[in-house]
Amino acid sequence: MPKTQHFAVESAARLHLMAFDVDGVLTTGDLYFTPNGDEIKVFSSLDGHGLKMLSEAGIKIALITGRKSAMLERRAENLGIQYVYQGVEDKRAAMRDLRVLLDLDADHCGYMGDDVVDLPVLRACGFSATVADGHDFVKPHVDYVSSKGGGRGAVREVCDFILEAQGKLDDMLQAYLHV
Image (tube, rainbow, N blue to C red; front, side):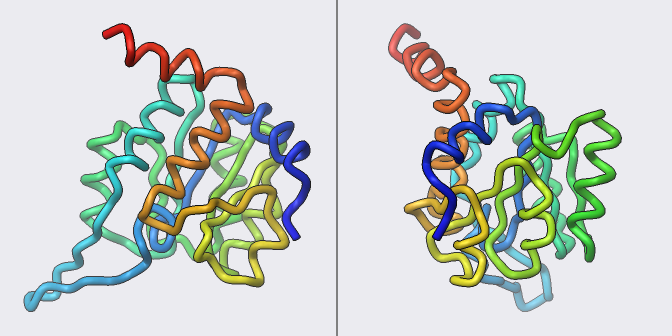
């Protein structure tokens, strides 16, 4: 069973960095290839706006993934994500390097992943999350399990959760009513 809601809110309130896996988190995890062998990824615009909102709130965003994709480079560039680690075998080591670079304690860092390969980094962060359709073995080891699946608004849900925990969500949403 995931940790208590209260613990998850407290953990999310401390975040200065939130990192995300890609396949199965920012995407559904399905892999599409063209006849030429080019990979196609489908990203949710809801998730993308959630990432932008986190960034606007002063939370640094990182992507740490085991695969390499030109599509991901383009998406990260479109969203203004500065920290992109692709082809990573040891995600925990990548997070450790990022923490050193940004001079952050583990308690101020979070990660969202969906599979057992993400567990070392999930367990090494102050806040951890997974998607509703993530691996069942992962769910008891994270602070927050989204109600939505990977690539289908799960990232936005977690972004909103973090912003709410930090007391920033309402003001950010209200700003859209006054445009």
